[in-house]
Image (cartoon, rainbow, N blue to C red; front, side, top):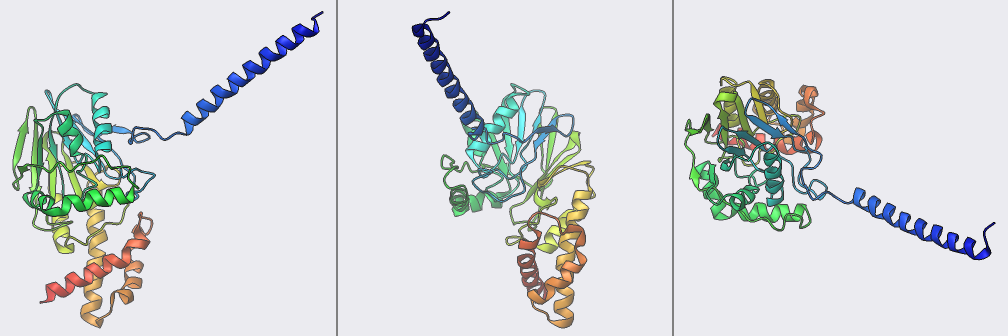
Length: 331
């Protein structure tokens, strides 16, 4: 039989052990609930061709929850190096993308290609400059010009505002290598062909064909299951680019936003913007209707796309932009 003193000592030991256990559980719970430092946590790296991978970004606009990450970064591993396409909206995304690449290869990252001026696609450049000071950054000449003339700061400030300061470390690493239309850049055993246009999603768009893999990186010239923004672009220009892209010898399409797929991404997106523009033009030409009067008629024709992210919110503005283009084209 234990003495009273022994019972007290055992009780004290149990209480101490219980306190320590509770402490460990509280710490473990806090760690589980703490946000990951890896901005790409939860987003898979998916192989889409023999040499090429991508990460499907969320469809929401930049916010605190997604820390500004929203595009589809992609990369191709050659026999000696790595090529990156649209490394994301901040240095945080760029660093996380480098970690993903390093899980697959130790090859140096030597080339980065940017599809257009919108910073959610290219502000991750900074991480690759930090990784390799000799990395080459490629873009449409007009993207480089606009970025230097203030557009880079606009996007830096926008990301800061939308993420409430999460992207504060980001500095704009503006591309220095000017692309030309139909330019083929040979990188080891891989050929990257640039397809430039005058005005589609913006006046700065470049699409990249990874010839050996039959992959096309469209940037925001094509969206999948997400309503676009065409304030800086042209409906007719974007439709023409989709028609040209459909003729390319590619099999895998990486849209600017939305999951990878086949050429139906191009035809669906062409259909999406064509319905809006053609319906707007018809109703303005025949009945001189205003955008708010046109909207119900457009909705009737777009049941296939009503579930696209942002459809309800974006449609009114998209019709307004189409109406302005119709008027401009009538002169």
